[in-house]
Length: 438
Image 1 (cartoon, rainbow, N blue to C red):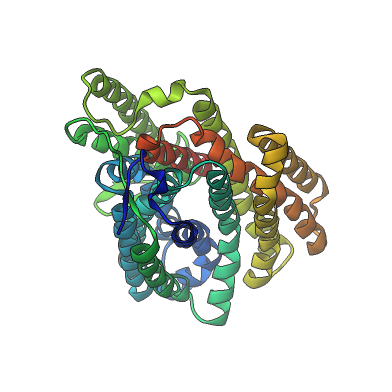
Image 2: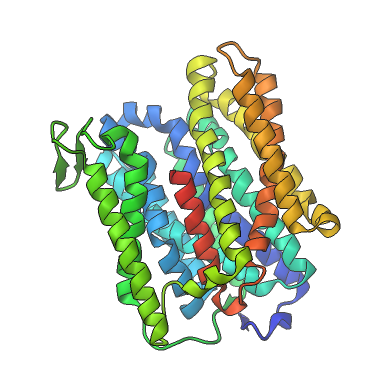
C-alpha cells in the first residue's frame, strides 16, 4: 500500500492511478444508484412486506436523510484518518446494510438496513472525490473529475432501470443483493489499486460537538424538506410514526415546522461553533474560510441547482411514465436511461470541450442544455406523448447534465488545497443532497 500527501503526487504509478479511479467510480456507482433504485420497486415491496404508507416513505427517504446528515463528518474523518480507510469501511457497511435489506421480512428490518446503507454511503461518497482530488494532478485531474461527474449524474438515472429490471425479472430483494458481488470486487480493487491519502497537516483535537451538531442539523433539515408534502408544512395532514416517536394526524401543528426549526437552529449553532474552533486553531468539521474562495462558493450554489433539477425530474417522470402513459417499470426505466446515456456521452467529451472553451464555459453550456431540455419537456408533455419524443428530450437534458456535472466538480475544487479535499468534496456532496431533497 502507498501513502500520499499533497506534497507527493508522483507516488502513484500511472497504470495503478487509472485503475484506482475505476475502482472508486464503481464504489460511487453503488451509492448513487441506491438513491434511486428503490422508488420503482417500492410498490412490490409494499405488497410483499405489507408496509403502510408511513413505513414505505421511510424506506424510500431515510437513506437520503442519513446520507446528508453524515457527509460533512465523514469527509473530515477521511482527511484526518485516511480516505482509503474510510472508503473501505463505507463499502463494508453498505454491503452489510444491503444483506440486511435483502433478508428483511418486515418494515423494521428494512428501515434499519436503509439507515446502515446511508451510513456506509456517507463514508464512500466524499472519500471517492477527495481521493481523486489528492491523487490526480494537472490535465489528469480534469479527466478524473469528468469521470466522477459523469458517474454521479448518469448513475442516478440508471437506478430506476436497474430496479425495474431486477424486480420484474427476479424479485425486489435483488436490488440489494446485486450490491454484494460488486462490493466485493470494489474492496479487492481498493486494496490493490487505491492509495491511502490523508491531510498532512491537522490541528489538535477531534471536533465531537461539531460532528453532533452537523448530524442533527442536516438530518432534521433534510427530513423536514422530504416529509413536508406528506406530513404537512404547518397543519398536520398525516401521522408520523418513527420508533417511539408518534405525532398524531389530528395535532394542531405538523411535526415538520418543529423539525425544520430545530434543524436550522442546530445548523446555526454548528456554524458558530466551527468559527469558534477555527479562532482557537482547533480541528473543525468544516473550514468556513473555504467559502471565501469564489469558485468554491458559487460552484456549490450551481451544484445545488443541478441536483434540484435532476432529482426533481427523477421523482416526477417515473410517475408520469407509469401512471399516465401506462408503461411497466422496465420500459419506464429504459426511457429514463436516455438521460443517463446523454450524461455519459457528454461527460466523456467534456474534457476536450473544457480544453478549448474553459471549464466555466462548459458548465454554462451544460446548464443551458438542461434548461432547454426541461422547458421542451414541460411544453410538449401530454397524456398521450410518444415515448420516443420523451426519450429524445431526456437525451438533450442528459447531455447538459453530463457537461455541467463533469466540469462543475473540478471547478468547485480547483482552488481548494489538497490537504482539505475531504472537507471540500464532502461540502459539495452535502450541497447536492440538500438540492436533491429540495
